[in-house]
Length: 284
Image 1: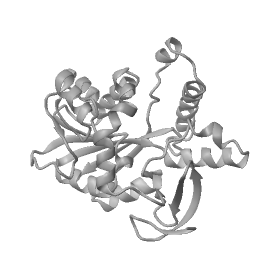
Image 2: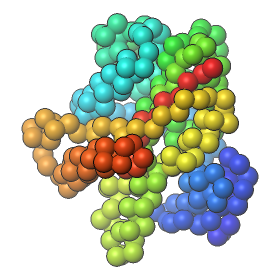
Image 3: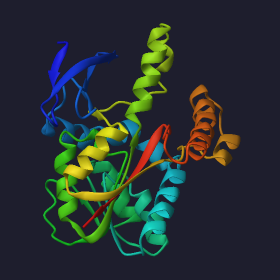
Image 4: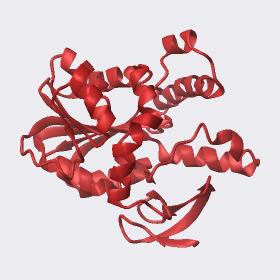
């Protein structure tokens, strides 16, 4: 059990930690953090097709993620002119709704049956029900986004490769995902003091967990360049924090977000400690 081959680069991985009943390993070469027993593509798709909305749809419908969506589209508009955007793992389509209201031509992809119904009815009729692998449209886009989606995939490198093929020359990929470097460090720190039960609601791990080192390697080896890694804003804005119930998670989230921003500026962008990362890459 204590040696596992990396699913990306086939190098040796070492046992990293156990969270709930899942064993996680970390590649000694590419830095990818991955489950020992990962789900195959069919199992992952069925999970999100049939279960995602019932378990997580509320966080979208409640508007809790709108702060992230707005900051995401603002970041995109700083890098390119408004054009055509494809959001992979779009869920209920609220990101597309915000983008369309700002003048973008939008399309989305999601396997969740219930989420796609809501997206088509309320926000965006151009949402494909299925996976990026199943998507056969050859239309090219100016921007492709994965907002908290890529680390859920069974084969994220295949998703990046197909996305690159759907981009126009000079097009951009925007990724948002939990910072694997930080979340694993937090978990291991709490484990040292036998506080793992307290940290479960603060850390996030899916099929994979990406560190800055790994995501740079993946994007470069996929033929993308001009890779930029930034702190992503918290899902809880300062205004929301003042107006909603202050749980331990929300308090720590807001405090840490300000801390991460400060560290970023003090170190001139050399240390990125956000709980979630925003990554931008360009197609030649």
